[in-house]
Image (cartoon, rainbow, N blue to C red; front, side):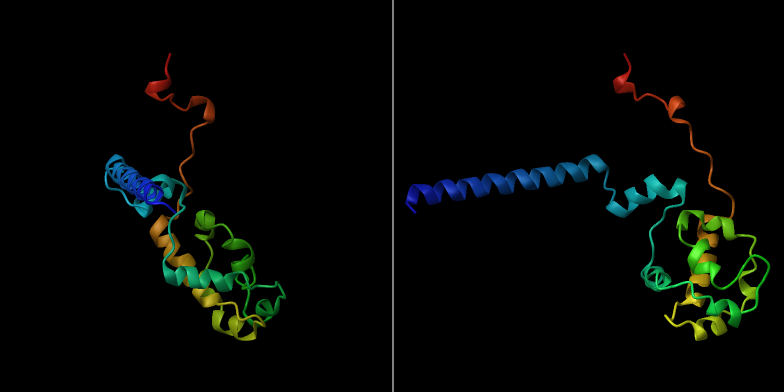
Length: 160
């Protein structure tokens, strides 16, 4: 490679570095200093989609191991609609809709006995704790209704 080609390459890499740093700084300035998680919370908190702690993420990893064998239902007593099997299979599949479990007596089941007979070792007690902390954090009322798409306000820049 000739000296002129090397100099052109160095100049091109320098321009690339300057352009990338300018782009990165302009994004930080335009966002008003928001980080990615703060923007995520601002966008999705109304829909009850919130970030998970590492402990919650670990509990949900075991959540998907349920194979619906029903052994936990026989080991733990039933409390109305709530059975041990329904917690990982139906009631916590959609975290924004955990508020629907607000009226269930989560403390009335023997979660330790249900987890002891589980062949895939689903952490039922941790999932129950996750539901309780989610209810405390997100509230027990249904989410506010969303505006219909036909009545969404038009941004000022697009009005004609």
